[in-house]
Amino acid sequence: MHLMQSKNRAAILGYGAYVPYYRLPTTEIARVWKGGGSGPNVEKAVAAADEDTVTMAIEAARQAMKMAGTESVGAVFVGTESKPYAVKPTSTIVAQALGQHHTLAADLEFACKAGTEAMQVITGLVGSGMIEAGIAIGMDTAQGRPGDDLEYTAASGGAAYVIGRKDRSAVALIDCSTSYVSDTGDFWRRAHERYPRHLSRFTGEPAYFHHIESSVKTLFEETGHKPSDFKYAVFHQPNPRFPVEVATRLGFTMEQIKTGLLNPMIGNTYAGSSPIGLAAVLDEARPGDKILMASFGSGAGSDAFCIEVLEGITRTRGVNPTVKSMLERSTKIDYSTYSKFRDKLQK
Amino acid sequence: MAIQYWRRRDRYYRLVGSRCKDCGDEFFPPVYKCKGCGSEHVADKEMPRTGRIVTYTQLHEPLPGFEAQAPLYLAVVKLDNGARVLTQIVDSPDDSVRTGAKVEATVRRMRVDGESGQIIYGYKFVVRS
Ligand SMILES: [Zn+2]
Image (cartoon, rainbow over all chains, first blue to last red; front, side, top):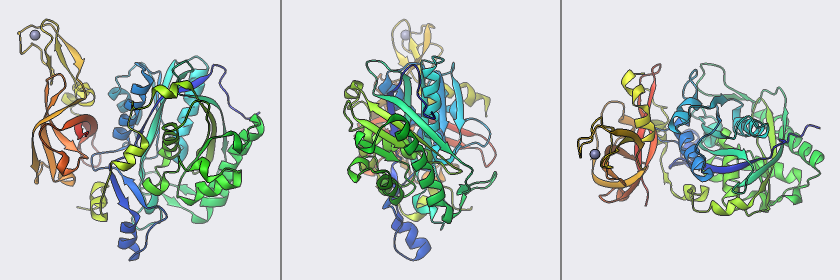
């Protein structure tokens, strides 16, 4: 068996999403670099000049703690590939802002799947009884090299999850998960480099599709679940096309994935991508609904989860702003403002 | 990190101020002695994160380090407990920034010490309509 399931049941007690206020239409990127056209997504979410992974993680985590009603946590894990410091944890700054000191704190790194990895580790810590509750955050301010194809999608945002012992007020049970990894060089960034590099030829088949299909199929084989058991499915979203394609290959319908499909409106929020898709689904889900979530991280790997919505979801309505409200509360910027915000201008 | 900032990080990240144990008055920034009754029995207390704009101004030539954010709004915010905070208003449409507008605290970068120094975080406010 490859399935991971905690002996003591662990559940999501609260969650919070964060999408920054600014949107860059991809027609702006195409206008500057290609003389017209657009990217695969309509817009991408852009962090303001004074935002970074720390500030966005604090916002999402604060919401998640509020919904959970949790005063203290035993772990603060931030999954990200855009740490403000190369050396100095993002997680200690977040913990300080949450008033948490007697806690594990660590930054997890695995390209776009660092957030779901944090969820698995905390599920294990809660499941073993080592901690009562912990907070897992997937958050990024992803940057693409100006003019590179990645620039259309590389976006900012993410979500935070307080995971603790399953109790009556719990929002959703983390029933089980699987992971599948291999050494695959589809995307990387060497130390001291500002922007990542990628091999377009590797991005799809041997990377995204192979890893997600492997983690999800393992989950199906070992639990006996099939796509029709799930009300919703959320896949990592590097562009609008891949999640639809992988869903179709695995036997899911558009109806199951549309609620969590945010790439067309916000782009690829990297470690935040599948966690924020899950948040959008939880905003609408009802007790008893099953959710499949599968992340993908370059380098490469995928985590697949079976999540079951619990009665506690009904008490969460109106507690925090929904993902939908964050998509609506936004303003468009042009390429020059984006360059100024994201430090792309040399002075 | 300047030692002063390090000592004040709970104030900057969590709006930790003071509450007088004798008369109940609350203050931000924190005080050693109650400004209302003069009592020295004051304790740390997290301020409410919501309030209203009392007065504001728009800066077109902000201080060094804030150039990328110009033009920016500076406001005096009265928190729900009556404490007053001088703060920047961010992520809010121009027509929403007005006297009486409801605002909520957020944490943002305040200052970045060049390419190799530390990043200083602190509170700013967003209009919540
Ligand atoms: Zn007093």
